[in-house]
Length: 389
Image (cartoon, rainbow, N blue to C red; front, side, top):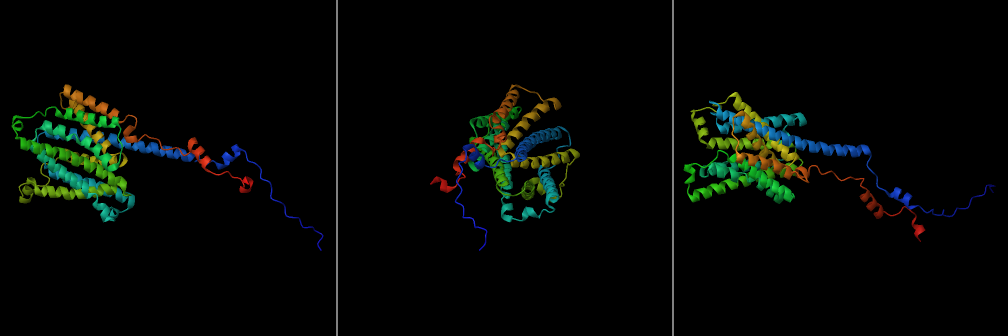
C-alpha cells in the first residue's frame, strides 16, 4: 500500500456574499473607450458641417447663376442662344462630371447600370421635371407674371407636405410657419416689376383657371420630384454620383426629345440655324455653373433634404436681388424690403429648436447612466444558484 494518504474530497466551498457595489461593477455594461466616443462625436459634427457647407454652396451657386443670366439678358448678343440646347449641354456636362468621379472612385461606370430596376427608378424625377417644364409654359401663357410668381412659390409648402406624406418626416409648427414665411418672402421679392399688363388682364375666366391649375400642378410636380429623388437617394445603397449620373442620362434623353419637338429643333433640322448658335464664353460659363448647381442639388438632398434645398434656393433668390442693387442699379422698394425681412426671419424660424431638420441633434450616448442602471436591474446577480436555496 502506498504510504501517501489520499485526501478526501473537500466539501463545496461556502458562497461569500458579494456587496452591492462590487456586484454593480461586475454587471455594468462595457463602456465605449474615450477614443471611440470621440470618433463618433467627430463623425457627427463632420456630417453636420457637410450639410451646412453644401447648403451654403448652393446659395452662392444659384445666386451667381441668377446674376450671370441677368447679365446675359442685359448685354447685346448674349441672349441669342437656344435655351433647349443650353439645357441639354448642361446635363451632358453634369453627366461627364459624375462619370469622371465614378471612374476615380470605382474605376468604371458600369456600376450605374448593374441593377436596371434600380436605375429605372431615377427616370421618374427626369420625367417629372419634363412635365413641370411643360406645365410652366402653359401657365405663363394664360397668367400674368405676378400671379404666376406667387402661385409657383407654393412649391416650398408642397415640399414640406410631401416630405411628411412620403417620407414620414415630422415638421414642427415653427418649421411650417418658417416654410410659409419663406414662400411669402420670395414671392414679394419676385413680384417687383411683374405687374400684370393690359393684355393679360383681359384673359377669359376659363383660360385663367387653366393657367392657375397648370402653375399649381407645376409646383406640386416640382416638389414631388425633389422628395422622390430624396427617397430613392437615401432608400437604397446606391452612391450619390451613381444616382446623379443616372439622372443626367435620363435628363439628356428627355431634353433631346424636348428639343426635337420644339420650333428651334425644327429649324436646326432644316439647316436654318445651328446647335451652338449664339454661344459665347458667357454662355458656356452659365452652362458650367448650372451643371455645378445640379450636382449641388443632389448633394444637398443626399446630406440634408428636399425642403432644405428649397429653403436654400429661396435664400439665393433674395440674395441675388440684394446683389443686383449694387451691380445693376436695381431699385429696392417696400415690397422687396418686406420680402427680404420675411425670408431672413423664416430661415431663423425654420432652424429653431431642431436646427436644419434635426441635423444638430446629438447621437445617443451609449454610456448614459440611466441606461446603464436600467441594464443593471435587468441582469441577474453573479452568484451561485445554490446560495438562493
